Length: 446
Image 1: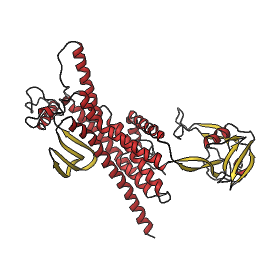
Image 2: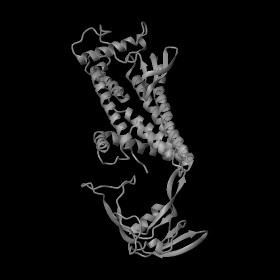
Image 3: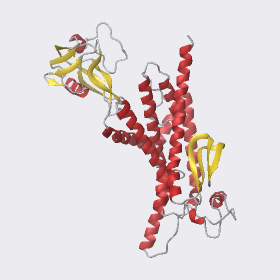
């Protein structure tokens, strides 16, 4: 009796390991996206590290030290001369305040990465377009990974879609707002069951109109409450004709993602539609290659929506973590939450192995989309912050040239170090809150 429990635990651990290994590989490829163009442009790269904190293991090849650190929540490459020096200052010489000290120490640390005679191999000396290529290389790698993984899921495994074959037939009619889920004496019989429809029937035509997909069924039934409809179905290789009249019933209004739409008062919206009491069987259908980029685009759009509404989303997470509210399954989660979901999926033995692999692959694809979008946020120390600084420098130089003024030189990004530290602190607090919420009030999919 203990063997299934042990197997379930092992599968749960396997699911977590898949996410951890996938995340480490994604981080490594992200940093490789920075590393390769940096080396091509001649920048000296002192370190290529996966993770943060203390070093677990490292090795040196040429001028670069490669290694792994204990906290696998990111990675970095250390390029020489990330901050331009101020004339006459290579180290801190004065401390007029806490923030001034931070700025001067940042410049000093940056200067220490430049060996004597290699000042020409610094990051800040590169043209703006080369710096942008280096900083965008990381997010671009995450986007490529996401596209490849989505292609594997959609084109290779396929997607579960409703078919024209019936998966279930309701015995009675229950409105969407009903608290009961089972039929009771006195409930009106569902038209589908009353007409003799059975699970396994394939709908061929309704009212003489050929049925190509399940949306065709919904369109006819929902618009035909009170109208007599002729159904033609295929059952065990033979054609069966029957008639039924859809009833007018209440259902929740759903958006394009299948989520219940709420009104201004927060109450779920309902609508009156025709009802037959049938549901489709799902079948896995391989998608064309042309479906990959739109799927990635939808995921990008969803992540952008989360980031734009992040303050309110984090408030919702806090209220759920410290109160009775449930977590929003479409809200932000931490790596811990992603790991729990992966373990949960991997350990469900009622789902075919192929579908579990497809789900985990899709999870890693979504994780890379999140890394792609999040790293483009125009705040230091994120890649988007360095890109924004480079664009500002280009704009400043263009205005100077337009007005006939001397080149103002590289932008002093070291002055933004205090803001960078504030961003790091906020991101750390949000990560801590998400991890806590994913432990005490995890997102549940089932």
